[in-house]
Image (cartoon, rainbow, N blue to C red; front, side, top):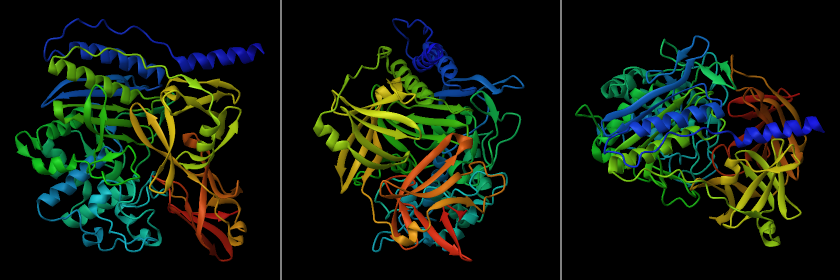
Length: 591
């Protein structure tokens, strides 16, 4: 018992964290004096890095055309004791998409491309099957807004030792299916942006990375930036997780996530955006082109609850900041976020070489922008307001009836069942309850060791609601003033006998050499009336993932739910008398 209580105390201490004292806030700050911003953010970054297991981080704050602060924290290479600096180069992940989309829009300005024409106009060998007759075409515009309906990824060979050229993705797609009709719902797609990179190569007759360097990176003055499958060089950061050095395996999909850069490089891109498309007085984009990229494109899409997209940009409004445009990024281990506030001509970029265990990058970015706005406009410095405590309570019978049921989510299958005056579920081995809240949303309560209710800070801030939207019962997540689709309530679909005969364990037979994200423990199961696709990726702590799938024919099923990765097709094949499953480029043979 004593050992158990000691363990419990340690866990609770870890959850609560510990905080030092922030620097003393001055009564007044002169216009343009960023010294307090530097001091406060330095304290905040060091505290959060320690709490969230981040080895190295770099940041830059941009005021119009000037970098008013840039600094590195921790280590770019812990073993060699090389400190992270503003010059440290990181994998920027999906920030790359902003650059690929900018290259596309430059071709529009040159009259070489119409983003509302079918992709096949410019990439004739592109083809993909569809179950949605009489819908609009896949176009560069709906690819840039992630409304093309394309699958999210081609998993096999994406992160591997020796990736094939990304242009080789086009041909295999002829055997795959679109997940949605175009413009039906926001569904993030690395695959789509990679196809735009292939289109750029065809239209320019140039290698993508070389063209991007000549056409965009060099004119912006991004001297240490480059598109590449991997990362190397004296300025390159190592990668870390849980205080251990890791390897950033090469990425096939360069246009979607292959940009290497430091915060000084990315500050030049921010400055261009804040200068209406100019860099060093020379036009990179026309003002009207930039404005179109920053304009919301999906206001008429009912299922995009809480999501606003421009061309490449994610748009939102934040308390104390205002309207922002941003894009984050994640590779296997590096993390990034680039944010601009056009109204105030301010921007922030944060790059890290480790995946934070919490919201470090968002927290630092938001604080930097709030302080910068106050300093630039002469407003009082913002107070460090405590997050209001939202009281929780037991659920009413009506609330239980509303939310109880089975859900398909990006996190996997969730079944909410009544448990006293709560709704209980288990997700990836963790027990959780939904409880009532006074603001009308459901609260999330985590059960430590499956028994003891605890509410870590991030869970306490998150809320859930259930809403009927455009024919779908959606579970919506609410966090820090933002709303997004968490999942969809689902009903079992009859399982044909031919598919029941395929239940069992499967193994991948066409794994790419040196594959980093290897699905293991793959299986087809039947559970709660659903056909389930199960797998784990132990190398990245993704264990016991379970996704309900629904038959759409004798030899195909779709992953249930809405959003990224959902509604994608799982094909059932027979080869030489053996059962196989084909999904995301993987071919799995029944054991």
